[in-house]
Length: 202
Image (cartoon, rainbow, N blue to C red; front, side):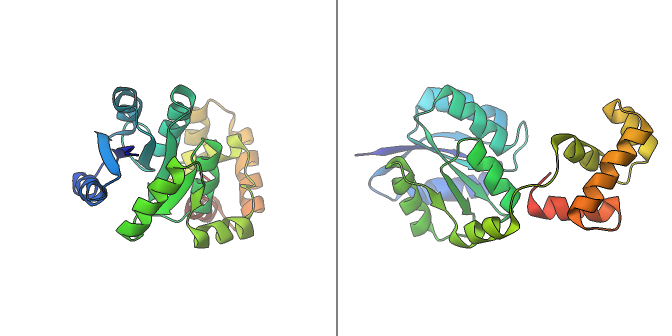
């Protein structure tokens, strides 16, 4: 059986390398490619892949959002997320979006081909070290609104600027930031944003 694969990756060199490596496998055929997150669904609808390999960080829309849309429109396509960053928050969000696999880009080519086969067969494929870390880190402690405020404040914007950006009162912004700082065990919002980013919680 030939496994039809879509590759979505914004870096042309990486996308080409993945395509070339997987094309060497006798049972894998690359039927579509995308360089942006918002190209994933049209490419998948045209190619009808069995497995989609999606980079997390792409222009247009991120890979996790693309995965959620692909799951809604083509639930038969198995999704494997590829990322440079082993962030546990990304793993949890990807699984919630419908992905069945999560691998780091530095995995050996043979491991990627085998992951494609496993996903096509209905199995889950998760980097084992990342899975262990995800269990240890636990769930994202931040609410959606706390994430919004922390994200808006991460570039050093003032309280009033964040309030204007999110259409909230300055007092409400302070409360959300205070809650986020406390939950993340940091001493200020810059540290809180950095910690949340490293965990993949933003």
